[in-house]
Length: 265
Image 1: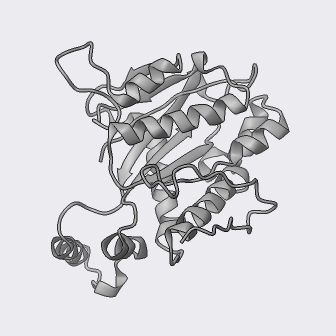
Image 2 (image 1 turned 180 degrees about the horizontal axis):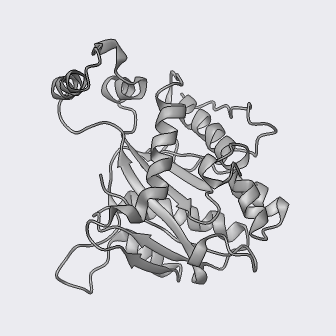
Image 3 (image 1 turned 180 degrees about the vertical axis):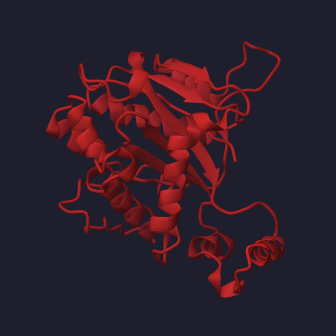
């Protein structure tokens, strides 16, 4: 799975991330291959770990991808210092979708008063982020977007997986706490519940590996004013390459139990 890292900084004079670093990554939500080969792979894994395999136990979101053509990729950005998380779904993993994601993220940060010239975007060498061409003058759509916003761009060394460990942990959390346990009947519900869960993650969910502090608390500790930190926590999860869902903007919920409603079917 390709991934990347995006770094940004400060709200006014308070730095959002350590050394301006925010990790950006994309992940595939279902393994590559046919449905039968995936089921066989899951069955073989169950046999190796001596756990009975039940076809009915295939994760719900995997079934949604197979049966209802739900988006099978997830783009995520996570600030290293504060842990604030931003996500978006996509049907395809491309530099164009990477560009849509980073532009939307830059717009969100600018609305909070951030100087994008102090942002450093760090990615791996996946084609959804960078142009792997012998011609060093060529730029991917993602690279061009970063450059156009006067932010910096840094690529991690090939195979340096530990550079992305923080956002990879979040990849697992959203799978275990949302995608594998929640149920939805439409893409409207998918983006609505994902938005509510991500606000909960940023505003209220304690992180055990950060002394049980929430990203909101860590932003305040970094010197970011409460009102700005509150708005920073809320981000509408969209589907980048779906015309119906790519430009959504929900209103900040009054509580974490509030799930934004959509009229789109």
